[in-house]
Length: 357
Image (tube, rainbow, N blue to C red; front, side, top):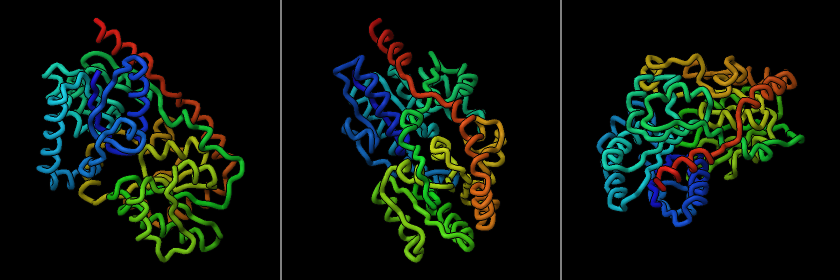
């Protein structure tokens, strides 16, 4: 079997590696082409994916031609390589166009991570007809997948498999700051995180640590903290810092689940440019932005979105989390039980039977 794959960020690389490893057990001669990095390096994919990291509404419009050319280049590559299956991980707006064109050519299409139609832009379900198989990380997402061409699977979440890496009884006076994995997120979220920590530390004596996924992220982060003696950045897995931390401030996204796994009381923030935010708000359906809160069906992690994300609000929530840490951890543990380990066996068995027939 030959598989084409697209992953835009570290969490996608992790998912992609697990799926491909699982398929490799069924198809020992598996070959792979596409885009990814990190955990996917084993499969010799290209790490040229800067255009996939463009987020929001405004920047994709500005870069539309470049993004479209890159998309068409990948489609041509997959057709030329005669792939049997295309796996798109997250990045639904980029992947939908690829699913549509490849499905018409008889190539099996798989979308990993259900687009968050339950939260916003519910009209995107119409594009699910171009997806043969949808792999969902959360059980409630299956309710939105009736339009998928063949079948949707609940596969669980890969982070839970590494739960032990997030837990350590010996926490320190550390605040973990996680401003996001994309450059645009770091630029928007890190400055107010720094200001909030600085305000909090006026009456405390904590150290803030920022995990960086790679050297380029570390380099960018360090431009913001060069004059901050109590803040440093380490190029390590986020779990290595989270498990030592007493509290965290985390950019909304997959990373908020890491705060849940580490049982660290977390403040969720998200800032973007105002045009992106206004469009986002007009299309928003869910009450909550953070996945832990959606799972809990209540706000267990305070959410500070856009103009709510101020240094005073961040400092106040950090103080509140540390003053109520036992109660916070109890609630976190209750919600954490709703996440299960990933299991790709049902999906890989279905693919195997599909191809055998």
